[in-house]
Structures are given as C-alpha cells and as structure tokens.
Image (tube, rainbow, N blue to C red; front, side, top):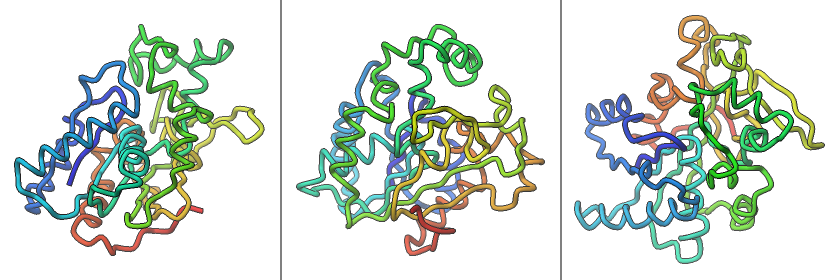
Length: 267
C-alpha cells in the first residue's frame, strides 16, 4: 500500500493511519514529494512511478498495490495510473482511495487567482491553509488544479482504468457547524456551472462533494453520524481528514477487503 500526501503537506500527516496499519500488519510505503517544490502534477506522478518501482525492487513485493491519497495527492496518483501508465498498465494497482480529492479541480485554486476575490480569501486562509507570503501565480500545482486547466482536461480524456477500484472519501458539514473550518465559518467555496461563486456546507472547508465527484467511483461521506460534528468538528475539515479516526477506519476496511461496499457511488 502506498500513501500519497497532498499539496503543501508531508508524509507525517499519515502517522495515525500508519500506526493502525502496523497493528493490522499491513505494509505501507510512504511517498514523500514535499521536497519537489515547484514541481508539476506530471513531475510528481513520474516520481511516484519511480518510487514504486524502487520499493518493489527493494522489498520484493510483486503483487497489486493500493494507493491511498489525500487531496491533490489523488490528482497526482490518478495522473500516474491513468495517463503516465494508462496505455501500458505496467503497474499493478488494485485500488485508488482518494480522501477529499479535487477530481474536478478546485474552486479555491481558481479563486486564489481572482484579482477581485483572491486577496481577501488568501488573507482569510493565511496561516491555516496557506502561508502569509503565498503567491498563487507562481505555484504550478495551484494553476494545474484550476477547473479549466489543460492537465485536468488531459486526465479526463484518459479516463478511469477499468482494472482499478476507485474510492472517494469526503466530509460534509451536515450540521452547518462553523467550527469545522473557522476561517470560512464552516463553509466551502464552490464554482457553479455558470461561473458564479457560492459557499456551501456540502464540503470540508476546501473541497466540496461536487469537486470530489468521480462518476462510477465508490463514495463515502463522513461523518456518518452528524452528531460527531458537535464533538469533534475540526477533525472533519480537509486538513485533518488523513488523521480522522472515521476516515482511517474506512480505509483499513477497504485495504483488508476491497469488496467492502461503499455508502454509495458517485454519479
């Protein structure tokens, strides 16, 4: 099993999941792309391919692997299996499990570039999701995560691989609790089909359910019990999802038994 962290993150985000995997004797490889500053999604996807080859050689593992990814890490992992390895299918992948994945791009990535809304949104997220000196125009990943980017169009054109099980795990603010993600009062920005903007509780503060949607993929929405948002609201924000106990439980279920049925399926 290979762990792929998200944008502006690091391998330590998986510490709680790794501990559970060790308890279950499930081997895991923790891919680190945090040092690839300025890299593109393609660069990260190719680095992931090389890393997996090296780990297979090092460990002797020749069976199928599962890719467990957070946020943009899902974008890079999908680009690897669907575009870089899409024709040859040389890598044996059983599942791609995406946690809060921007499968349809990110409204925030688009908003960051808005001369009207960008400065205010960046200010609200400074120190929470981006640094105070963050410049979106110079960030390759942010540009590629915009809904209309060429690389996202390339991914859509390639299509999902029929030999892989796809899973999407997302969080929504069912109770409208502002403590889920205080910088945005518990809401998530979303771009409508007509290009207008709105905020919604149907997301995790960063990614909405619509942005995570991947037609045909299994979908799990957390929390299952909305009361959990009263007890631990911040655990369900985008940043915390890799450490969320409910998310970890679901991942482990899929790893032990890939035939585990999801709550439903993306449309």
